Image (cartoon, rainbow, N blue to C red; front, side, top):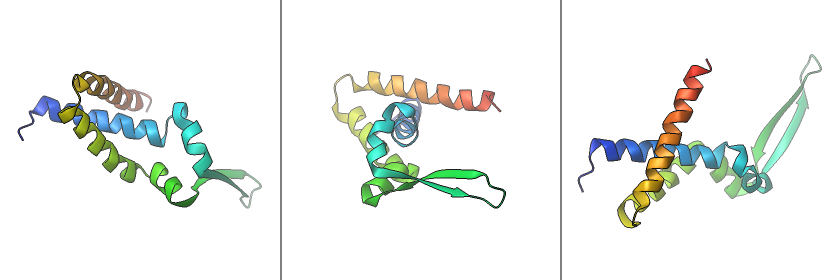
Length: 108
């Protein structure tokens, strides 16, 4: 299989964006919420600290960027190879992925 540089970059950025959508973005928080629990503790100075802990195997899988990244790459490659006009959706995700990287860099 011969994938050109443009298509490879498109797959990389689309996979990045899809992974971030699943693991971090607020728009899909409702999917993650049943599989995560909020843990609250107080530090020595009386400040409250909160973080999310995964519940069970599904919680582990959807909160791990490395895990979701592998499945995302598999899905993006399948869309690229087998879905007619799937490259349009991949291109949109890729543009959004690169845009989010640029946004993060510009905020520093």
